[in-house]
View 1 (cartoon, rainbow over the protein chains, first blue to last red):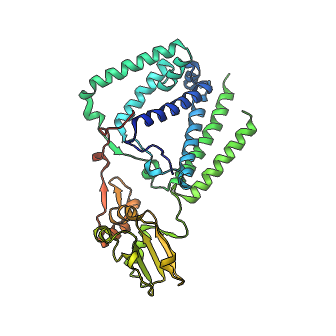
View 2 (spheres, helix red, strand yellow):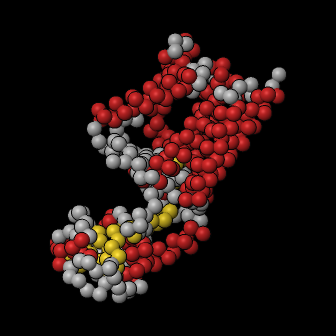
Length: 192
Length: 168
């Protein structure tokens, strides 16, 4: 039997159970990395503490290499892994808005959950703001439906964009990541 | 974490990455007794006289969507074919087919689904590069030879934004 173990459209209960397990693991990893603290996240933007980049990029590398090699050895059906659609301009706008919110709040949605679960008051307020924002966007989405669905590119991956084999792109991302880690260490050491 | 441990992790990542670049694709390589749908299509188009394609399903299934030139495995009799390629949803047993004759027995990797996906209806994105389109041209030609139709995927019209998904 190969993963994904839960087919899309399968049992809702099992899907939610799997989501809970994954979510607990994700939250645990974030909390242990210290990303439940707004000070640590903001340090990324001031150049004082680049832990966010190192943690997230490390996770990306593990997941990317894991998917590649699990697929290669037949333990994962790569074609069954869901790839979200790309919508260039809406997602660029959303990313900018997300970044602005992250800088102001000092937390992103995931770390806000971790922060709140850790007992931090600011995490609770960010979560509240998150829910208000989601409700506002949901109620007003119909006004921006055209923009929301514009510049569609389907399930678009880097190998498709670059016209390179998957393995080559994987290797390139690993090299970029390792350079980024070295650069982060050098940059942090330069900070007073 | 100590720098030495960082170095070990970095080395492991680089090794995994280098091997990934070497193998190229995250899909399982073909087993020694398997053949891809595209390669089989090339063999059929080349009209190899030593090739026999056998369908292990029912006669009705063979008639409905069998591969070009395929025969029922149940009715197969020894002949001059040196290479047998089997496909279907029934367990493939080699002994009755080989019958002591030195033959090469292969299985179609991915079965009918792979034939339909990779040979009859290959897909290319409409925003593919010139190099990708050139590479796809041979696949498209192969598809038309077998009566298929290569498809151009317009990602702008294939939006799944409104697709209902459980969970998120």
